[in-house]
Image 1 (spheres, helix red, strand yellow):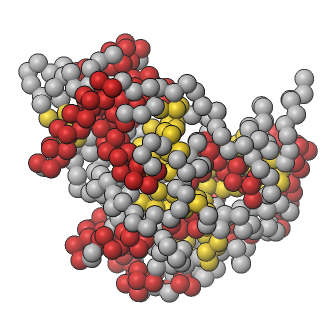
Image 2 (spheres, helix red, strand yellow; image 1 turned 120 degrees about the vertical axis):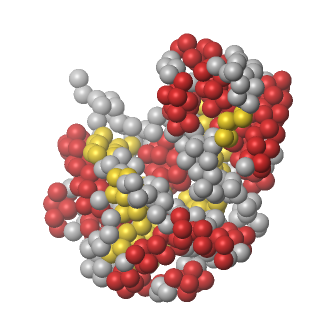
Image 3 (cartoon, one colour; image 1 turned 180 degrees about the horizontal axis):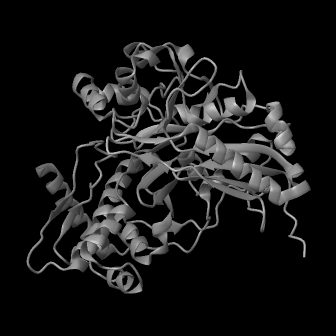
Length: 489
């Protein structure tokens, strides 16, 4: 039996994540093709005891090539229906290359903490409010200013090198010289771009002793590259003549694909870590200090914040107490009164990103006693994360409006206990996004728009989870206690 027909044109999306690369071909509705058009290959992050978190660029390239091979092979002659290629990758990424585009370093990512001393020195010597207002990001080890200071200090021979995000390097491998561009999305994620002028920040270039020629030429997502190198054109004839759009960052694509594509619709990602983002209707004149401002593309600013805390804190609490996640734990947590165990957790077990951006921050469990149970500790992990998300939500409303629609996605949404905690802590309805791969869907939507089509941006949403006013009041009290503990330490 032949697979059902899917509306054309099709788009091949390539999602470069922190452990693997996934290629997915989507149709003119940004839907997946039944039973075909998918490829996946491993490209794992390597973390070291020294704080390094890096990828091998060649391994990423090989994974991309393999994922594309698999997706095209499953389509056969149908691959000729593909009208464009859209790529996203983790943000931010940084690598040094020589004038021929050959890699001189591995790919540093946002999780690399070796630049923490440089970030701390910047915070000590610079007026961070001014830096934040100009570049849209805080002074932090995950951004290029600190990472470049670290790299150039460790390897001064790189001072004449060029510095690219991984997406730029991949495009150079596929298309050859002249393709060394980077999207506004990719470069706003670095902290090296002026958020209002959308040009390289000359203040940071001067401080680092860099020339603009050492960085990729800025482009927009919809400005395509075409004309694959002969070796790749013969390998992928269906992709040889189609536009390849400028790679953007996965968070921007996930926001578009997961319901945060328009003003007033705020997207929350609930995974091992968490994030909250919105596309506002205009450029914020004054960016709230704990938030960042990136870009989806030239016409769409993206404002939000990312937390180190999320499901990873819940997993830690389960390991600590020996309690197994499952139906019994789910039932115990779902109907429990917030704060019933008397505990308050500051869940900064891996440092802090938004809103304080303090790498040295650590977690604290308050209110523990001889009567404390394992369930109390696990419940405090959920409540602690929910309180931090509510704090971020209060800041987001300064940009998104007082009553934005909240669309949530991520692995934790499978838990009704987590859905309830989020709704009660934020005090607003939570609309679960039922799209299995919002990032890939967002890439397809943006590509279809760039190809001149008018896609349906609205994702498939489940029934909203409504907040309980009494439980929201309990969470407000918990938030006050959590803030008091944070201020005390």
